[in-house]
Length: 347
Picture 1 (tube, rainbow, N blue to C red):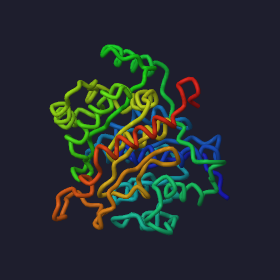
Picture 2 (picture 1 turned 180 degrees about the vertical axis):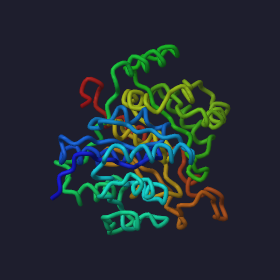
Picture 3 (picture 1 turned 90 degrees about the vertical axis):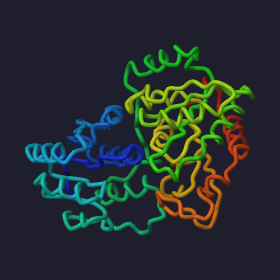
């Protein structure tokens, strides 16, 4: 088995995919403990990777062609002896090739012709496997097997907790109190549970005294959060657009529970050990659901789901999500809260 000393991981996006690739980083670090390991990532997610253990460098790139080309050409000067392409697209394959690295590994079924740019191709036995396990196939082919259960090794930086405590404190909420994070956004419109359902659920959570509801998301999600708040009878705390990806580990690590669509924050919560109630419609929880035990996935089971489409072509628009009721979600939330240890018992 080859020994590698300078390793580059190419996984530029998206948030959830970056998080799901962290166990592969952990496995590579354990197998090559003295190696210099860098990660090539879009600048918007670099702050999250700065909280990942085992990285020597986070190589951030602007998501423009000029920015990508500039950083790719700079990679050549670092003398990498292994490039791991977990993105599997033409651009990432070209990036791997332009590094000049003699060993380039990726998936045999990667898209857009990228496998032709690898020196080693890893077969994927079935599409119906979780992204975490699929990425780990690459690590396994390099002799980097997890020593136990896959580990995300994502940690908040010093000062993150204090910043989150201050942010919540300005809304009158102590970080150690019971509070439920709620992510009402998703990149695909077809992944979004209706705002009136989120609103009804948030009202029930707060009127039943299960905890305060904290809405979160990026600046681009403010309209979706507003649509939920306008339909609520109670008042949530709205942090939409107020946090950065780098602060998500501290924020979601402090939450009692996360209620979410299929989204990047869902995977951050999993990495931080926070229980999740996730809503799945057009996508597959087998492939991209919350990883590991202790989480709940709710889906309708309509025949056309999962369709993996950003456009709903069903006669009943978004039937796959509309058939998941607020009552079902509340039952799942109550069940998760009943199973959760007290704060002092949390691992």
